[in-house]
Amino acid sequence: MPGVILDTDFLSSFLKIGQLDLVRLYFQVGDVLVTDAVVGELARAGLLDRVAALPWVHVRTGDLLPNRSTQQRLGPLEAGETSPIALALVTPDGALLTNDRRADRAAARLGVTVLDIPGFLAACKASGLLDRESLAATVKDPRDKDHYQFAARVLGFLLS
Image (cartoon, rainbow, N blue to C red; front, side, top):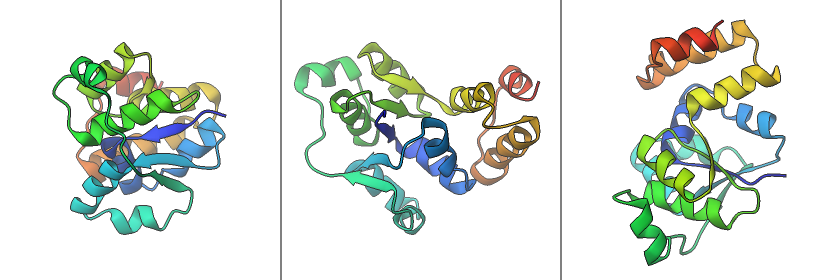
């Protein structure tokens, strides 16, 4: 079973649209992982109560900052991005779900499996977990509840 790690952007979006359980269903895992830094960012965004109500979201505490060499390769990212990447690096079969493009590219350079929101929804579509009707609602919700816009070509692919 893979270790599924969520960064703040991804977790926040899926909390707001009420679709976080989709992550567990797709990866067939009992729980997902977040870091202290992610929890801190969720608290500042007023979302801590929502995530605290989910017993299957586990917080990995402690020093999850990358070593100096890895930090240099990551570039100018905040702890909310670097700590999930560091956790993914030490989690067997770790997969990182992020919607931060810089974090996505940095993690991929380090060999971390990464999915962003469009990639995750495309994977759910390909697996049959979401049909066209479910996808239509799922792509509408981030725009309405989180000000997230899908590129026209991505939206076209997801809804085809």
